[in-house]
Amino acid sequence: MILLTLESSADEGAVCIAKVDPKKPLHFDLLSHKIFSQIDIHKEYGGIFPNLAKREHAKTLPLLLAEALTESSLFKELKHDREMDVDDEDWLERHFEKEPELYNTMKLFFLSVKKPNIDAIGVTRGPGLTPALWVSINIAKALSRFWEIPLYGLHHMEGHIYAGLLKEEGHGYKIAQINYPGLALLISGGHTEIVRMLPDMTYQIIGETKDDAVGEAFDKSARSLGLPYPGGPLISKYAEEARNELLTVPEHLTLPRPMLHTKDYNFSFSGLKTSVATKIEKIKKDGDIDDTTLKTICLEVENAITEVLVKKVGRAIFETGARSLTVGGGVIANSNIRNSLKALCEDLDVELHVPTVKNSTDNALMIMASFIARIENKNSTSNDTSWKALGTWKLSELNNWPKGD
Ligand code: KG4
Ligand code: ZN
Image 1 (cartoon, rainbow, N blue to C red):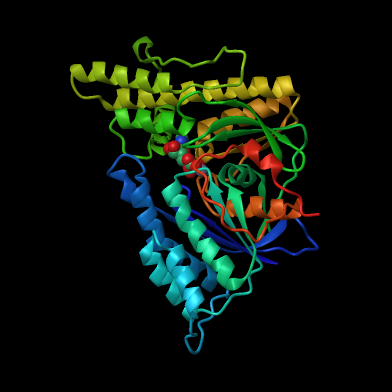
Image 2: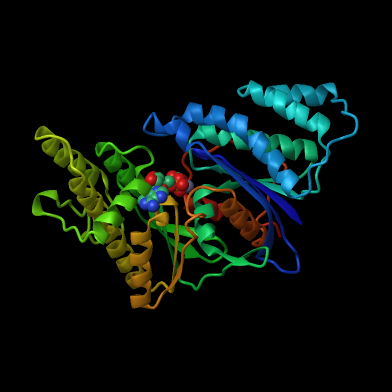
């Protein structure tokens, strides 16, 4: 069985093609994975502009699709362009009403490219920026209609969880099965959640942020420091340098550890961001921020965030009796957070699943992993593809996904 997944929930557009041997469920060969990051385009605006992201996805996703099909030896041009009947042409025009450039590209694609040997398509339905999400959703719906194969709308954060469960094996991956009771910690640019992972791919959110997500706390603190978007990786780099130089944090640069001692599993990061901004304003009154101060603030931001995450998730593991922790979301690319969670899980004798650094940020391989797990879990799809992109979509809403048999 050959599967295709598409992802465009924020500023990364990605396409993945994989082959699953039905005799070896939860294993797959990776045929191709293509990602285009728009970071350089959004950098000058200091964040993601949804409509700009949409326009860029509309330009790049068809190219990524063609590249992925070519790399998988599935791209075959027709000897003679086929004709498109009026109904199909009408449908395509209406379908891409809001993305006219995609109408032309996809029409040409269907007229000149042979239907590849692909059995099903999975696309990120949400959560994310809806203008960006719609691009890959509309491409996926058109492919599903013209190739007459089923389409599944998948959950971006479940994808991040499954990124952590991917273990390299041969030409592809194995999807690990967790020890129950299981917990997931999700830390991305838009989400901060502690989730109980229950059997049959169901979830219970037991803690979440009251305001900013942890990735936002990194990015907004970085912005106050004059660092370009996305600031997380840069804060991490300077914090590492501060550690190597054995810098210590003086009293006047210490930051709060929001909600560290509250008896719940919730988070709040907006106070941290404000505190960074206030301190920087004060320093700037006396002149520019020097290198040492910059690195020290980065160290303190990273330490404060790490401490809160480790404390809250540690308590959640203890109180729920969890035997595994799976971590997902772009922020787990951060090595201090990775190392601290590793030490925590060793202390508590809990199995830890984290993605590779490369698979931590948005990609279509993680969506593939969750897609294969959903198929293995016999979650059904219907022929009705009139569903919409979902800007917000709680993981626990997946619990009602109908079983196929
Ligand atoms: O999961 P992701 O790629 O996109 C969302 O779904 O939001 O996460 C992006 C977030 C950004 O806020 C980025 O600054 C953060 O992940 N990030 C990091 C690091 N690498 C990416 N934060 C801290 N340290 C890093 N090394
Ligand atoms: Zn993400």
